[in-house]
Image 1: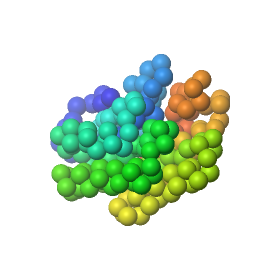
Image 2: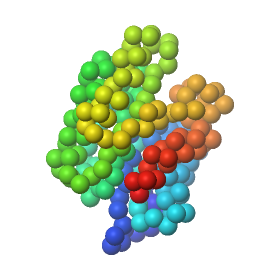
Image 3: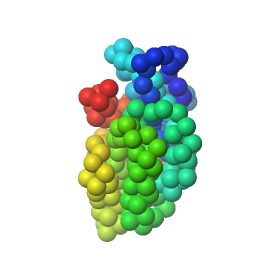
Image 4: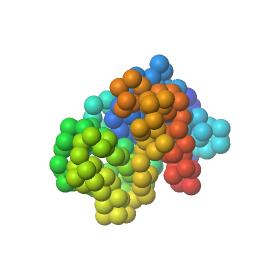
Length: 194
């Protein structure tokens, strides 16, 4: 999804690089209801010179992100929100592997486009996966943010995860109302950078 305005001189690009939570899986109209689209609306209302690209891919993992980041970097980017890792957790991926992949994505972005600012979106797993795993998994995101010196959105699904009324029937993907809450969470972190 690209914001409905042509890229003109001085317009910068904000890319949301994520999975189904970013792509807007299960929404009636992801192009207007997914949180990146809602951020694009906020940017337009604030008359800021940014275009938004939704590079969310349902089912993607951090390993998949390592493989496809070069494709996303074919365009000039000013700000990238890295929102991968949920599928790693649901598949029981070793948190050390997730951490290494996130750091590899950040390193590749910096190698190809050194001026890109990166924001990392944190994720948590449901307690049903066990306390040891969920704690190790949750620790990945602050560790990556500290190591790579990037801002952290502590939990992408804050005030949405675990709230049935804001999630679709699968209990994992937000409804349009849930995405509106996610957009507010993300906007608080992005607004000072725009």
